[in-house]
Every structure is written in structure tokens, then in C-alpha cells.
Image (tube, rainbow, N blue to C red; front, top):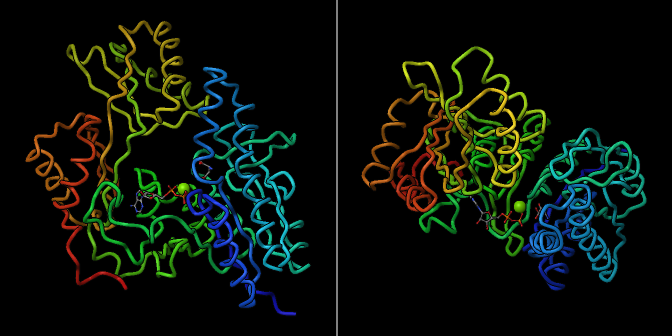
Amino acid sequence: MSAMVLVVQKFGGTSLADAEKIHRAARRAIRAKLSGQQVVLVVSAMGRTTDDLVKLAQAVCCDPPKRELDMLLTTGEQVSIALMAMAIDAAGHEAISLTAGQLGLVTDSAHTRSRIQRISRDRIDAELAAGKIVIVAGFQGADQAGEITTLGRGASDTTATALAAVLGAKCCEIYTDVDGVYSADPRLVPGARKIDEINYDTMLEMAATGATVMHSRAIEFGKKFQVPIYVRSSMTDAEGTLITAATPGMEAIVVRGVTLREDLAVVAMNGVPNTPGAAARIFSEVAKSNILIDDIVQNLYDGGRVANIGFSTNSSESAEAMAICRRLGKQLGVDGVEIDEGVSKVSAVGLGMRTHSGIAATMFEALAKEKINIDNISTSEIVISCIVRREDGPRALRCLHSAFELDEPREDDIA
Ligand code: ADP
Ligand code: ASP
Ligand code: MG
């Protein structure tokens, strides 16, 4: 028997916000099944459930133990898988809901920010072979000991692409509340344009710098295992955006999108003795606790005798980062440790930057014209980012979108 084609469909929270939307998602899955494909569904928690659960935890405890937070937050997805299975059953088709523990999605033990280590195919294969639509709880995992973990906010996308990779799916479809990936967040930039096709690397950087429409680790799986990812609206049959490997035509476009991250804070140690090993100590300590460092900033002063060493990190992890820096600061004899929570980061992303000079100049000129001050600049092969004051962020995003002519229809748009 030749292997059947398999598709993974993921539905986000807004696409499951009420019973009617759950039925709509169920119908889409059934349609795929009836067309002869095997279907694995990955679902998020309904509507804003996860946010509400986080608030509830904070109302009970100002610093909830991470293990218990995972225990609580994973309930959201568990509600969705059960309801989805019921909706499919009500439509006369067979389905089964599975938690991460039940299917064998194993992660490390870093609660609230775990990483997937392996996914077992056995249970899913058996259920698919029995003709069922398999519904998997997104965002969650189980460590070696069976402890319940989560993969980080927004990570149901990652569950979906990782499953698509392991199962050899023909593609992974991400159904959400926008009809694709745009040149900027359409909620912030009215002139943002839908992108028909984008390569993994550009999308990865857009996601990492603020395009929350996709979880960045989801793109890593897609890229590594060459899974085509479609981002589409759950409400329409519009085409959406295809995320795939780079094609020669894509190179022509210099800046593909602009992004904004508002969930950052800058932690800085002032007066660090400028001796070999100081930075190594700071960053190895921070890394040990699994805190992700976004950008690093270092300024020397006093004739190079001392330095200010800072880094931007997720707001949700900044208090922990601050505590580590305070402890280290005492050992290193620094002047002080500060945290700045009033920052945002705007970025321009595109493969064409590798070969085009002048992108940085365009970016700085556009911000200068708007009288937006730049606190820090970082660049990589395909991204240029500026740290700006939080209140300037949305305005900075809009001015860069225009400066890079992203609101214009373009001839080289890939259909
Ligand atoms: P879901 O619940 O389906 O996972 P998310 O809220 O995580 O949905 O992601 C969809 C949202 O991502 C959109 O409503 C949009 O505001 C936001 N977004 C941010 N940047 C972009 C972008 N570049 N293109 C499209 N949407 C974006
Ligand atoms: N429900 C989780 C969250 O809100 C995961 C997801 O939606 O992707 O972060
Ligand atoms: Mg999401």
C-alpha cells in the first residue's frame, strides 16, 4: 500500500474562540480527510484562555512555581482538543484527542521554556491507520520523568511544524486571524501588504524580531526538515503565505518586512572592570539559567578602564536576569545594575541586505526625520535593529514601512 499523504493543520486561539469556530475548524479538517489525506490537527487554547490563566496564577501567587504554571497553562489546550474531537464526532467522523504525554512528545525539563527532544510516531501512526483524525494539544510537552512542560508562549506553531517534520507531512497549515504574513503587523501598520511567498530565513528573523504571527522555533523545524508552511485565515479560503526555501527570484527584494518587539527590557551592569573574562562570566551565568539574550551592548569609558555591559532580554525573564546580574555585580565589584523596561526594538528584515549597502542609512535617516532617538543598533546578515523608546515604537515601525516602500505594490512580488 502506498503511503497516504498527510497534512498537519494548526488552529490558533482566536480561530477556536467559541463553539461555532470550533465547528468551522472541524469542517476544514474533515474536508481534508474526505479529499483522501490523513489529518493531524494541532490546537491552541480557546481565545485568550492562556492569558487569563496567567492572570489567575498571578492573582494567587506573585511568583508562581514554574512547574505549577505549566500544569495550569496546559489545561487550556486540553479543553480545545476534547471539544475539537467532540465537534468532529458530531459531524459523523472519527477523531481522537491526545496530550503531549499520551503521544510521546518529549522535552527537556526547563519549565515554561522547554525544547522538544523527540516525538514518537507510534501512537499517532496507529490512530491514523485506524482512520481517525488525530488532535494534538499544542504548546505542551512532557519531560523524561513525565512532568508536564510548555514550549513558550505562542509555541503551538512549533508543535505543529515539529509534528509535520517527524510525520513527513506534505505541508503544515497554520490557520490564524490574519490571511497570511504581512510586510508589518497589520494591526499597527494600516498599509501593510500580504506577502505571497517568503523564505525560511527571512521569516525566521521576522518572527524572532516581533512578527508574532509565527513562533520562530516553528520556522526552524520547517527549515531543517524542508516542510512547506502555509499561513492562512481560518475564516476564508484565501491563498495565504507560503514559507519555503529561498528561490533565486526572492533575492531581488531587499527589505521584506519591518517588525516591532515590545516585550523587551535592557539589563545593564555599569562600571564593569574591562578585563578579560568579565563578559564571559556574565553571559555564561545568564545562559546557565536558560535566559535568552537578545542583543548585547557594551560601551567603554574612563579611557577604556571600565565598561557598561548590557543586554536586551524578554520582559518575562528580565527580573531573573537582573537577579543574576546583581549577584555577579557584587563579585565583580561593579558600580551598579540597572534595568530599563521602557524600550522596544524595530527591525528591517530581508535577504537582499547581504548585498545592498545603504539599508542602514535609509533606516537611520527615516528615524531621524521622525525625531526618534536610537538607543542601540545591532546588525546581522539579514536584519538591522534599533532599540528605541517604547512610546516611539509604533511610529518608528510605520515610518520604516514607508521608507522601505513596503506599502507600494511591487513588480517583483512573487505570486
Ligand atoms: P494565533 O492565535 O492564531 O496563533 P497570533 O495572535 O499568535 O494568532 O498571531 C496572529 C497575529 O499576529 C495577527 O493578528 C497580527 O496582529 C500579528 N502579527 C504580527 N506581525 C505580523 C505580520 N508581519 N503579519 C501578519 N500578522 C502579524
Ligand atoms: N496557548 C498558548 C499561548 O497562548 C500557545 C499558542 O497559542 O500558541 O501562548
Ligand atoms: Mg500564535
